[in-house]
Image (tube, rainbow, N blue to C red; front, side, top):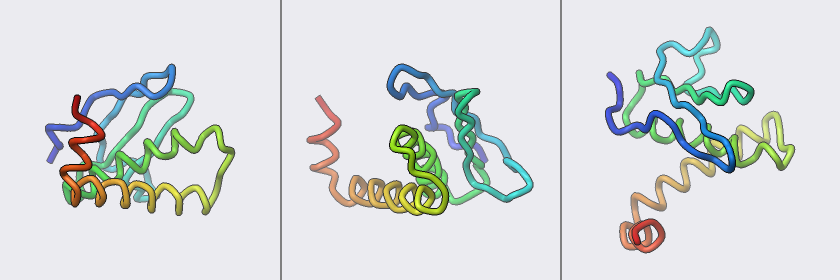
Length: 103
């Protein structure tokens, strides 16, 4: 099942990243993947719809951390936690979401 609302691309800094939905991504059973040189974010759509959104945000957090030179296990822990917390905070606080993101 493809997620209809998912954008086909995002702009981050001076770059544009294409978003692809692909199942399976690879043999490692990853749910998401970012290919920096190709500027592609891949998300496996065969997961719970909320998990798809969290996976996409997880990969975007990788973009944010790129210039901080954080890697390995710490990077994955940060991406998991930041993505989950951002989604939960925005979902549970509609007035905050509206204040931050609507003109």
